[in-house]
Image (tube, rainbow over all chains, first blue to last red; front, top):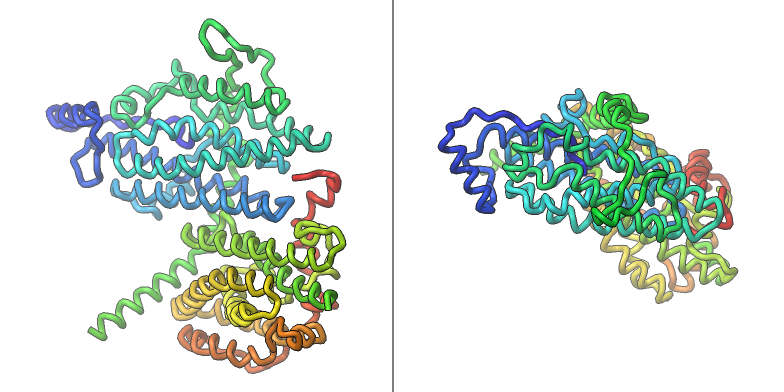
Length: 325
Length: 251
């Protein structure tokens, strides 16, 4: 789940128009960019899609961290392809957000100055090769839980972007699991590396779904607009139910003593993550927040002359073409 | 024959491995999202070509090594990459200029290798040349755009050209290995490719408002492995870390 804690915007539109809009959503219509929409719907979507796009872009960094150290040519190619897919997802999502009246450059500025966020998970470091497995298995796994239902979201461009993204994400998750399998069937050191990655990534992955429903105040409006399709706790439960048996299959132990199958509810009981840590990470105090934004800022600043050069050349070309006509 | 062929294949595979690695260092930090995607794509093509060249090299060597063993278990002096591709990325301009100088050579070399008397080489070249043509199209357009962009982008591109130029000549230096390959109908006469290469790059540099350096001085030692750059050792230290640290592991 790459968008967290999205605050729904209040909306001050004409009640009749609002009711008609809601009726369209309830009927399962897709809302397209040029159609009327409540201001709150538009703003909430910009925030959500923008955050999702930023997560894809910042999310390149922890995995990019291992591209130059991938242990085989094949693993290097797979990881490169994966990180390239993420840049592609960022691109579709920025395009989807741009249809709502905000530019990619504006969104980038908002990411860099802290007005827009990205998923908390990318503020955790990737320390060993097993983290490439754990990120694919757990982080992409959690993202898919959220994104599969978002294929049915009410905003057309977002929904269509999700269809493409979901196909690639499931592939990424399988690749992550494949790395974990290889590690778990490997040497003692590789098994230890895999367990260590799970130990570090488990709770941050659970945090990806956002705070517990009882503390999540922004869901109701977004759910009625079909911008958010499930509650945080529903998705978290689904994720744990899917992941616990996979961990068992790998021979790894989820770092939660309370984790147990609950026959009555037909799902696992599990411990909540440390929400204080979650809020600290959102506040900028995660292990890598500063480095991640610094890396993006540096890329943006170092690239300024390139963007300006390309733009200047395009303008010269256009002027020449015009003069020739 | 097989010793020279092995050496020749290492040269082909090490160039793509080293340049692919360099380009992959841009992942996540390129000047624009489109460039990030394009650079990752280029790096991916090179890693794919490396797999083919080094797998064949390992077969020719016939000592039980595979492509990964060649990539991850050789030290600097066993590498046969050109000095040009070992050069650090620098700014985006230097990366693209390095790419352009190599792409123009690579297209010519691979085009010749499509007609190689060695069937495997011809097959690999046929697959790779399409990718190389696309790389050249992209790097050519970007060099022109940045050369003929702003004053600042022109200054940076000229500087990149000046810095990289002394490393370009090594691509056309012919040694005993090349001569043996040429005699066997396996590889082209590299010295003869130089004229065609200049014919590709000269008009591009002119459109890019860039001046070709006058000196023809060329650093040598990469493709023979006699004297690599200091950069290569650092690259290998990063690239080979896992297989070296966990020699018994399968990944």
